[in-house]
Amino acid sequence: MIVHGQVFRPEQLNGFITEDWSGVITYIIQNDSCEIISLNSLKENRGIGTALIHKVANEARKQNCRRLFLVTTNDNLHALGFYQRRGFELTAIRHGAVDEARKIKTGIPLIGMNGIPLRDEIELEILHP
Image (cartoon, rainbow, N blue to C red; front, side, top):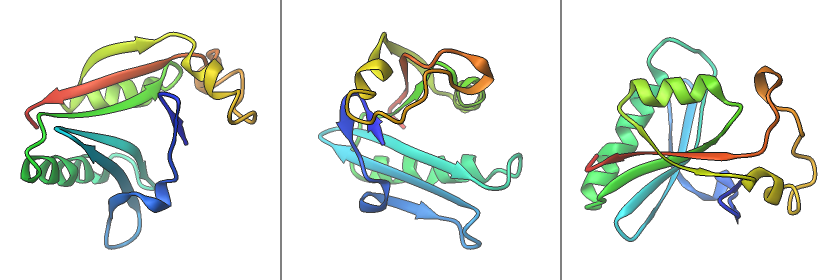
């Protein structure tokens, strides 16, 4: 994964997996911030993603993090709604960030979900998780 110009390998990150392997979340903690790198749920609308976010938020509190944040792309309307319903607020748009990521990972498509051109990163955060 490439996020804000940085390459991440989720299998090398800290994270949580549900008991039945239906959901996984990965994150990194740097200084006083905790960043969710990936969140996947195989069974939607069952609270799996929300529960995993709560686990990361609890870990962030234990580590005295000031903020919990994540980055998604401009085409991911489902994620944008999901995270905002859970208290995340939009904090930044990095115009052209996906175009820059394509220079590193050439397989990133030009058109993303919902037929939307895939070009920008959107950052969301919760302060004092």
